[in-house]
Amino acid sequence: MDFVANLTLGLQTALTFENLIYAAVGCFLGTLIGVLPGLGPLTTISMLLPFTFGLSPIGALIMLAGIYYGAAYGGSTTAILVNMPGEASSVVTTIDGHKMARQGRAGSALAAAAIGSFVAGSFGVLVLAVFSGPIAQIAFSFGPAEYFALMFLGLIAAVSLTSGPLLKSLAMIVIGLLVGLVGMDVNSGVVRFAFGNMALWEGVSFIVISIGIFAFAEIVSTLERHKAGDAQIAPIKSIMPTKEDIKRMTPSILRGSALGSLLGVLPGAGVSLASFFAYSLEKKTSKYKHEFGHGAIEGVAGPESANNAAAQTSFIPTLTLGIPGSATMALMLGAMVIHNIQPGPSVVTKNPDLFWGLIVSMWIGNLFLVILNLPLIGMWVRLLRIPYTMLFPAILMFCCIGVYASSYSLFDVFMVAGFGAVGYILAKLNCEPAPLLLGFVLGPMVEEYFRRALVLSKGDFSVFISRPISAVLLTLAIAMLVFAALPKLRKTRKTVFADE
Image (cartoon, rainbow, N blue to C red; front, side):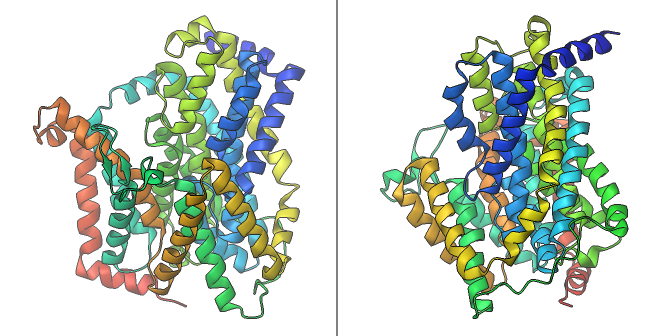
């Protein structure tokens, strides 16, 4: 009965005309920003946060939440159409989504992302509403050793993202780890690998490395492949998935929703890790393993479902424990403090209208995303028909504007060009950049939790195997690495990923 009463309170709060407008505006801005190269929810929320000072607390949080999960969906659009992820969670989508676009199946890929996002987002909201208390307790039981083991498992799982040799995959992860270590050490305050350049004191921005390695490198490679300057893309027959596509993507959406809902609760794991794990899971469970990397719809539906479910459940530790799992959640936490809301377990009892109103508004926001984006699929796919000579200068311009707007640093703009050259060289060497980016995202967290665990254990390395959850996760990681390194399986990988 309490759940029904709380849900009724949430409906009464979220269905007011004012809050519906805030949800719609947030979803539209989030999707728009997610589509634009270089800008993501972190930058957008940072810019719009001062404009929420005059809004009611629930209205401000509803709009900011809409921007967050709207951008999580919007980033898939450019990832599919022009092979350019705007956020870490969209990196995996480029692997099969862009291949589908080149095969004339961009409509199916975008529809799979939209439907998967709605289903997973709704499931994530249900998890947030029903299991917020128990799941928050599970997340609270994780210590530094468990988080290190989880991040390490994520890095090893990145090996399954690539179709090339194992050593190349591991090399890409190590390079990503090294780039992620650039900047000031959070524990000692010592600046590392900055080479005397103050612009590197805060490290390399995710926007810089992702746009450089994916967008700039893709532009150069495409222009090299097609001297005439036009995209060689098959005609788009339909903007909706076929019956076969729906049959194949439905289990992927369900698996991605469940996996993303679980990982989203863990502070530090978040949206990007959910999408990478979901892709790895789909590749291992699918009957169409040979299609992965060549346009498998499961490679779009699974990760997109996982990252949107994680976007919803990532609010659990922020709202109930006051622990932000990401920089974006930290901004949401700041917004709550600005509006005199004390995050923590008391938010459910002292501000039930805010808590349940926000939960219901998330489901409404996911419905808005489908209503807004499914009719716009035709407009998005028309971008594929624009000649590259016109499309790529515009993409470059938006990329540079986005990079500069995120940091107001010309050095970052030049650094994007440098990473673009690196991405082009990697493409020539047949080295896939997805593991590099995952190493970059998870590397600093792996180091932080590793050192924190050793500090708490007074330098005792046995802490990683004496705690059951940590021991199990590390065992899985080692088993996965050994499994991938077996000679027989290396030969199988070569056969499976052979070019058709």
